[in-house]
Length: 281
Ligand SMILES: N[C@@H](CCC(=O)N[C@@H](CS)C(=O)NCC(=O)O)C(=O)O
Image (cartoon, rainbow, N blue to C red; front, side, top):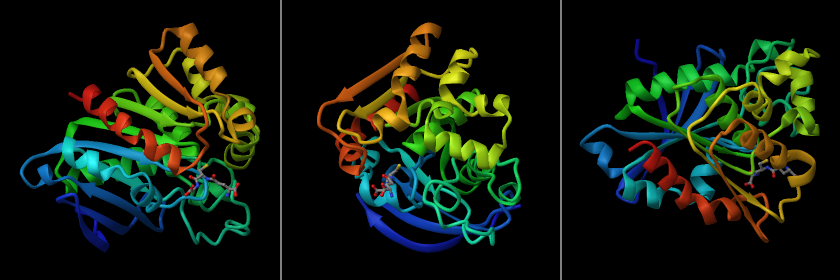
């Protein structure tokens, strides 16, 4: 069955097309929004696809507006897909009251705890429904699909790729929440969404998954050293140590002076697109 897509807006961009969509998600049970950049090459053939998972407080627009990724995506012929960071207007009490949990903060996992479990199923949404929708309704090359993300979305990119071997053939991250078991953002999200089950927390922690023997394609991770969240929330040192221990290839680049935001991301976005392009070749 072909899902009905409402086109909210569409724009010519670097000879390709930037569009914003809404559809009724079967997995979430509510309308969801996502965005797609189709490079000019997509008019003639199937192209590689990169899913970008954004961070706390972001929407399906943030990456497309702020990262400046379309110029290089147009040159390389890569499709870009981004999605909202959570279900919205679920009716769950207090859903939008706290920017660290709930609306804008779905953490790319399937909640098992009430009341969140009724709607907050971002892992299944991203890895199953949206993935299949992009393959079935866009000129996407199913052999060349990658994933990347920022902060909460960096955590999402790493964990979804780790938990679904073979689904994404290239992976990278900007300032990811790399060991959520050990930081306030992660502990709060896991407590609300997964309850107090230590094993299920470990199954959504990139560092713990690497320690448990899960593997990824060669990784690129960029991190600003002027990022106010680095020490308390991101814990890249733990992730780096796990990768070294397990022989996981990791190119972790630490950049003096850069902070957590999209000025940092836009500076290094071209390197990420080239990383994915080469991995997917
Ligand atoms: N709202 C938070 C900041 C949240 C934040 O930094 N979000 C990051 C992702 S974790 C982001 O990408 N924000 C959107 C933006 O920079 O445009 C605060 O005021 O401290």
